[in-house]
Length: 236
Ligand SMILES: CC(C)(COP(=O)(O)OP(=O)(O)OC[C@H]1O[C@@H](n2cnc3c(N)ncnc32)[C@H](O)[C@@H]1OP(=O)(O)O)[C@@H](O)C(=O)NCCC(=O)NCCS
Image (cartoon, rainbow, N blue to C red; front, side, top):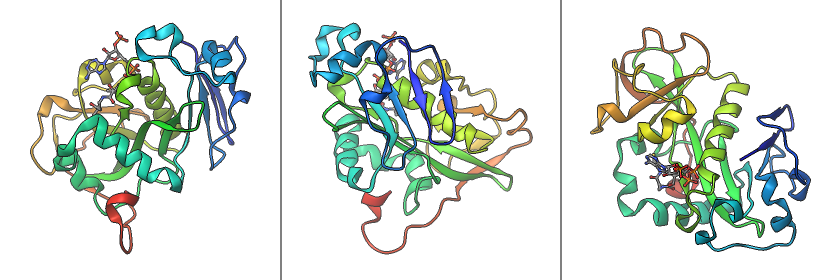
């Protein structure tokens, strides 16, 4: 599948786009991004929405944009649906709770009606007593739209934007068979630990700058901007 990624500051063409393209969708609220499955653009233009079992070639088109304030409730409902009620018990949550995502690094996928059908955010963390990095997650896609490329597009876009913003490395806790396709592996995380229970082989990392994780060791700590006031769970 081909994607065209547009940004206010940079335009990155991951693969040539041949079909009607991202102009079908307006840019995100922060003007940052649009990602489109071009082969599906005509369906999007018609406002159609295919059933999930029609196969990847007929999956609904989507765009990826910066998350807006108004997306918070839809995002939380989607996360509950995709990940279940125990999602807030994960060790990663300790690094997110009460914090804001890293500046410019919260994204949603929207279907042609504008509904939120995917979400990913990245968070500022500190590697033990060492340098900064990002923690990615949660990544989730509307259950009925799985395997339509939304998760991959969110990942590729999130990683590209993190690199563009100058970050050195991204970590996450997840399945290597999925995240390996984006370059993540456990090879660089053996000396790092999450601040709570986790499976070591699922702590994965990707260097955006060569050597960014050299010498990194210790327990990963939260380093994001703190949320002030109420409604922390919904803001973050
Ligand atoms: C994981 C998730 C985000 C992937 O999104 P998606 O839009 O379905 O992913 P894509 O369409 O880009 O990729 C689908 C491919 O990834 C594979 N895949 C999905 N989850 C996988 C996993 N945990 N391990 C290995 N492969 C996986 C699918 O089998 C499919 O393979 P194929 O391309 O050979 O058919 C989505 O399945 C989801 O929301 N899951 C529930 C929430 C979750 O577990 N999030 C990750 C928490 S870290």
